[in-house]
Length: 627
Image 1 (cartoon, helix red, strand yellow):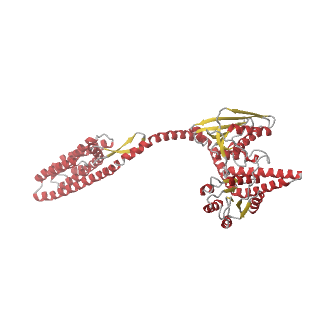
Image 2 (cartoon, one colour):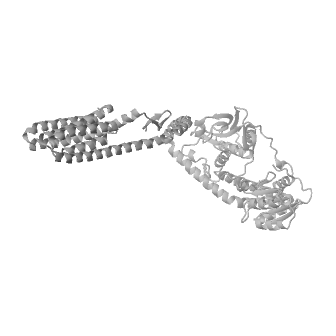
Image 3 (cartoon, one colour):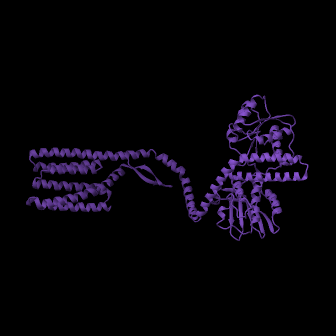
């Protein structure tokens, strides 16, 4: 048997691994346990023999009184000294067995002296009691047996001389019972002690696993400690900005509420805009009266602006479809500057600084233009008396601390900073600057969505916006977007080329639950020479398909009551595996990806769309040129 002692392991000061000790160490621990027992035994000895001393001084026969009282006083003194020494940790554990044995023998000596002088009839009982107490305290068996043998031997010698045969026989039975109880007490304590050792030995079998685990996490622990220290320092700094963090939480909650609202109304609202756009486009093509044509153009422009507002709301809810491609940020900025130059006041000077090369990002070009345009317009509005609008483009490598402050991952980012020399933003306004519908402009001068939309677009691209501003010193909005190494793709505006017409009559199954939008779809496609079948919902589409041998295209809304678009497409593909599908939706829906409904030759057309965009998308999917 071995005893397990817990020692600290390097790099794991909070975890202890049990290691086996030698037999000598086991005996030493038994001696240390005995020191605690000696403290209680010495106190009991001092108390008991104080009483016995008083008894002997008053009731013991005179010829034995002096010897017994003196002996009692010595035992009281010894008990007090041992008790004080053990309480104050003045005793060496190696001396504990000797001191315990000496104290036991001294007590037995007092009992035997009383037996010799006054023929104490209860001496055997007292000796048996000492045997029981000392054997239970002595965890080392050789000590317990040796001490018990000495005590019993001393008693036997004295009792054989001082007791008659009848009394001696009774005392023998008492001593025998005492020895039995002492043995039971000793081996019970020993078994309990060894049972504890056995439990600890069981932990030894886990030592290798624990050491392996500790070795595996040692480096991670060190890194974690460093991060904890860094985070602790950061938390001390953040205590001063608790109010700002609470404002950010409220902002996030508002953004989430607006996102839920946008997702709920986007489908129906985009259906209405699509119907209006298609009708206005058809009316414009047949308008001969110039005032009417101008009115239709204005209405069409208003519809376009309404669709941009819808997309802005979807940005807040992160539900719009992004067309991400590798683009050069500087090229996008050049186009934005041309637009800003047309709307900026004459007293606003535009400055561009490109401090790095290779500023490529993976982004939706139109969305990125909207972000930069919104920031530039806000900068111009912040300089009513004129000033300088400076746009800086650079590549920045963010370390762990910088990235954590922006809630980004460390790495290389393209930073576009839009700075103005305007009035600046005060500390009260800064926490609310990206909130939807928050604006400092007069009533009717702004929607309060510009910065909120920019913030939503940048976050959806995996980036962040940082604001630095002071009253009277202007403001700087820094947009961070993940940098890529790829060369930018050449972007061709499809609206610059008219859609090709159908080369022969091709069949299209249109599935749309909105009657007006369905009529618009049918009207537009029929005018292009397609054979159009229309279904009011998913179940109606499956019923119509049962009577057809094939169709060239399934044009379906994504969200419908009953069977939705992905479910209809999956069912029809089981019959026609090569079926091509054009989905139309007011916002990007995760069900397309989850259901695997969007094949490599299919396409998703976002609402609202014009008739020209619809015809082009249909032609691309039918011809197999859809990206």
